[in-house]
Length: 124
Image 1 (cartoon, rainbow, N blue to C red):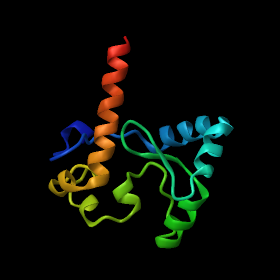
Image 2: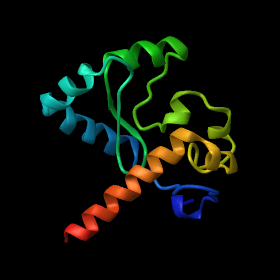
Image 3: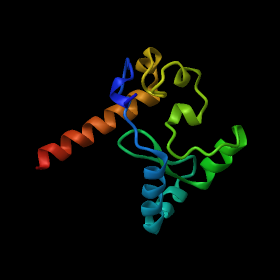
């Protein structure tokens, strides 16, 4: 089933594959300034792609997420990494359930990605 076939109540279901995430991660790591910026944050910092998937994070995030469930979270969305109960309600995961409409994190991420997309289109 393609991501476009998944039912969603809030945000897009599309995401990229784990091998694509790993390739993107390598590109980000090669830009050492990105990791330095993430490490400069006093709290958890995550870098998301346009599909809302985690592609980079700082050491504070490692301590938090690995302390919670010990699993790798590259390619996951925020709610999936946090084990949000609503991220498991829909096949497409975090950001697609009816409850995601009320989630402050999902709203903020969607708003920012929409703003960036509009700014990019206006620049063309």
